[in-house]
Image (cartoon, rainbow, N blue to C red; front, side, top):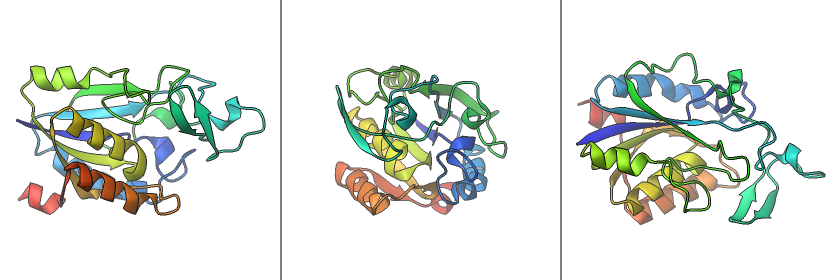
Amino acid sequence: MEALLIIDVQNDFCPGGALEVPNGEQIIPTINKLSREFDIVIQTQDWHPKGHSSFASSHQGKEPFEIIEMPYGEQVLWPDHCVQSSPGANFHPDLETKRSQLIIRKGFRKDIDSYSAFYENDDETTTGLTGYLKDRDIDTLCAVGLATDFCVKWSVIDGIKEDFNLYVVEDAVKGIDIDGSVDQAWQEMLDKGAQKISSQKLLN
């Protein structure tokens, strides 16, 4: 059985948001079309408390996009974004969410960031998504959303580690693209066994 995994289509990741993905809103009509065709739709939502450790503002003298060392490894420092209950954390108003059956909130632990739908950035703390999918006999995920080079990439790679089949819908993802990070993300996902697919192929 397969499911659509919609990753972080939130106001702060769309144009005008605190951490906007260029043209991020352009994929929403395609995602909406896909969500109407899947029996199972799952979403993720970045959900940070104020003063989260991944925010540059939480570290004196640090600027957004600097990299620091955390107990779990390297951490990119971000502008404050997707703060719990803020307008920026809300799903984009154009995104159709009524068919979603599960929302995985991530990044709500103050001392650890979370890109992946499956694991927080320590690669140990789980979100519970694997158990949910296995309980429902879901073995295949089609990933869409934001951003290709961070939360989409890590969700796809971790999903493959958890023995799921992963398809990435190439016209339903967008990336931030820091120094070529989108191309690198695609290469990493494909090298791990992800498959690239178009929405047209899925809709047909």
